Length: 312
Image 1 (cartoon, rainbow, N blue to C red):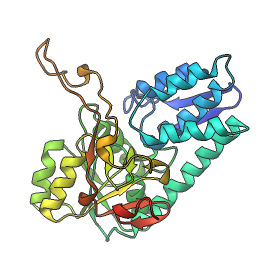
Image 2: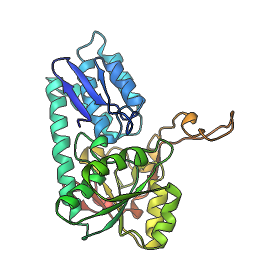
Image 3: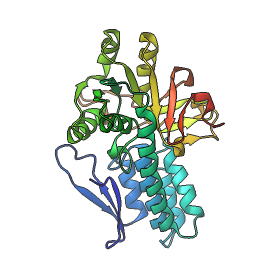
Image 4: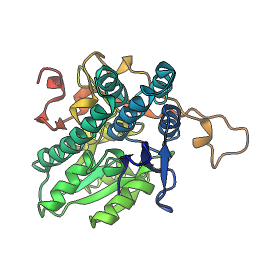
């Protein structure tokens, strides 16, 4: 399984189409920057590190087109919240060899995720019961994963972790994607509806929670899939540690706090599936978890307190 991969023969970006999973495993080829931007916007590729990798290849394609600025602008506007997208664009735009830089970003992402797994596994006790939200495995990255990478590393160390997977409405990334990955990895798990997390924690059925991040602000505030903030609040109420696993590329030192981040609002139709025709909806894709609710941040550099995110 390759989430994001450069097809040298086609001179195109090859993406595993995550909108079709778990029913169908199919791929989309993107030969232009506009096609990459559309794939990111439509969530064919999703997850901050994977978006960053796709954006890097999209930028390399854009810089080879007659109007590079137009292609870059399309990619830049495709998803406004994930820091990795802008970080990747900045790197590729500055590079003397854009495609080589995109390849470098992908290699670094793979190495970072494996290091995150190793760092985070030190926090996992044998047979720990772990709550996860959204999808943070190989599908959300180039390979291995962030929060799910910690679970994966714990499994590889023989710690026998167990996952409670929040379904993650409205696009069900947990129900569709995380369960699919865990099944392939042979990691035991159970799916829960998002609103069951409170009862789960109240009954002492979980030992820790781990989320990923789409942007980490200078003060340690975490922007992640909507529903992360209430999960962190529930963890504090019930004395369960809440960790965030993300690569350093997700850290946005230029944004002082979460209230300054543009929160993407998606199509109302994602929410109104079961509602009467004409029902209006508000559909923010992300929320902000204050740094005070985060026990620690796990990155390739190690485990540290949220307030140390920029100074480390």
